[in-house]
Length: 578
Image (cartoon, rainbow, N blue to C red; front, top):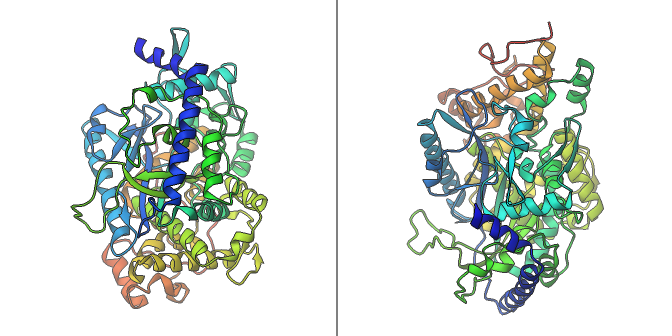
């Protein structure tokens, strides 16, 4: 720890920050020279994925990730000791690239799961943990000790960068970080950010001068896409322990669908709104300058220890600046060479491949790999389609796009959003908006070289949500908690029971749409054509699902008010209001 605290002090000195700023500016000049000379151009679109999750014990309580888990390839630690990140090697976006992404992510998740099973633990693919560790949420988030005059969070990774950031953010906030949520008003450490987990699809684009167009298009998609996948409506259950029945009813009615967003934005606040929706930019030079001139919180603790290779992708200072450019969409310079086929001998595991890509960051972790790949396909196809076809959505004002995003944060699938269709018509009608959105995504994937059958396969789990009883995981969570509350549970035990059911469903299903309750009427005529296009007929589609043992009656169109997805007789909570 002595070496670590020395690193923290060095990262905060004016001299270190000044050297960092100068070096980042120098590297930015080299990057722009390389971009304008064509050295970052690539021939193909490519995709990759990061998936953040957390680990629980056999009682579904939060625990620290055993070190052995991080011996798994494509698995990394994160800010909290309970967090784990799984990621894919990039694939060219054509032919079987999307299917390889799914296969690799499944392999990583399975390997991590097998490693955890030896410790009676499970990885949970969720956006915000709600069953706390045994000591309770507040004690867990505030635990720490003073060492060399610095607060060291007990449950954060002892990584110099994290420790230095936490120290600087605490100093700015006088030791108390204001989160502003009713049951989570403040916290002594940025470790509160480890409450939330997300997925980040990456899209490599062929021409780096198109980065501004893709960034601006991405801003205008954030609201509608988030409204399709919201997944963090409740805080850890014990934070509701003192809530009255009247307040509980209000919480269940008014709770945002994406608490993850304000938690992250506030946990790293130093007065400059570093975590926010990015501004529109007109040129790649403006974008690179925005990153370089963004507020510096700390100098990277290991920057001066880097051995410069002077290769085209040797930009440690700029990479560190980008890493704290906490915008909900941001660019990435350089990466690993994408695979063109399953066993590509030219593929490199290093990050020295000259390329540019968009990192799409506003999405919560989803229940299954299938859902994750569906969103990866949707985001990639949507961005390509919007930019390549010069879609009129680009004329939607930035202010409206930002309003769309935060409306989706609050209201999830019921958000009232504004969209501009391919024909140039402004609409707030969800049916028209999503019909256009998925059409554009299909065209974008097709332009990239993805065949029709794979497009249908990839988008189906997300598109089917539009006609599901619970269109997003957050809506399902709301319904589960309200049902338990109406059955006599307190809000605390209702949230815990919901989370137990979530984990069971996550482990037993291929995608979230299988969580829908089975309605009483078989209505094949209500099945949209796109849902069985790759099977050839409705009958083939139904036979496919029946053969997999997951066939469900199709709804007659009436949504049941509150139908329980699974019998929860083995729920942990036993106390109730009755």
